Image 1 (tube, rainbow over the protein chains, first blue to last red):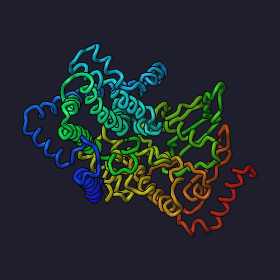
Image 2: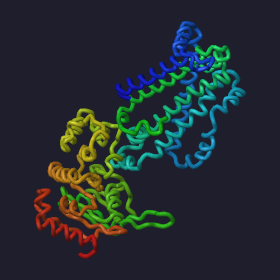
Image 3: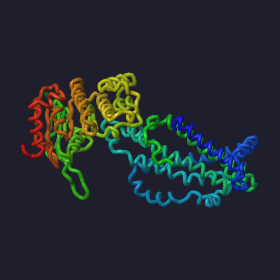
Image 4: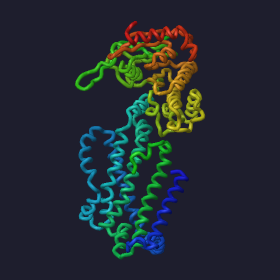
Length: 260
Length: 255
């Protein structure tokens, strides 16, 4: 997004918040528990002044990043192996396609039974579904490389290792990055869900707690914080990718294909 | 003059489905030092397969392929490919300069490598674009990047597979003249595949007509045009028109 787009996007958001504020204040909406944005902001101020708030953010952030990191590690390694070996692909693709559509949320009670109210339970619930985007995109990125690149590597007499490091891996990097982004936003969602239904900690639990305590302004405050975490993590990942893969950016249709 | 490439009775058979398809059969070819050898033929006649066999990307089923007298079974040093699909052949995540460096990164130390890359970029007139990425350049410029990458290894032979087929007529004409100038500057021999008869005659010292499948060299024409070619004058000369006619007839099978 360019600067102009950023300004326009912020303008749209501001207009939406103003409209929301006006609707609530004028009393034209009849929801009992819909606070105005100004009330949510005030609640956030009160939360930030207290001690528990930052610990809750820290917990959810830790669970998300840890779960995502485990999923990335497993996904990239397995994806590379599957992408490079047609033999392995033949034997495992059916299992992957059978497991992949299972909704990750459904594993939350299973994780709860297996690990109790703990971080491990949360990690299990995060890792299982976030694994797939990384694995599938890494595998696809490697196995879909054009044979032409292999011919270029051979005709310039690159060794096998040199060709992998200089040609195959970087060629698949953009596709791996798509998987990383998809699984990162999924990891935030799964962490919050795990905290809502299972481990009573972090932001997900806080949302439920504030809802049950009939404090809608605080509840919305937590929801916004969760949204903000998702945006910031995606932004950090893209900033990292921009440094690591300078050639991929600005190229039209290369990065955003298949994302979102 | 000793031959750079020597092919004798080369055949290529590839398994297709249940059977075996004959791609090339009884190809004899000898490439002289500094020669531009163009190969024309209809699509499916085995042109690309022949080039791949010469470059060691595909192993011949029979016959002998010698590069400077040595039989080859893998891409030999000093032979560089230029492919038709520049977008697929260039490393899109590398800058122009780092693309050009690909073939010399292991063999040359950094300062020398920088000089070599600069020299190759100068040869194709892309000095100003060293820091650009391929996707920021036009098709003709990307193809010149690929050419520079090949030239950076100081090849004695360039194997070019319809390199200008995807380009517009004006860009194509410009690159044809550039290629002939590069041949004069570097002394490299060139094997140039095309399906464009005019291009084959314009560039070639010799034109081979490949017929197939299975592909075999049906005719070879020596192009006795003046060594310096010129887009308008050469193409309008009676000798050019006569040769074009002859090659055309040979492809149609009326020679």
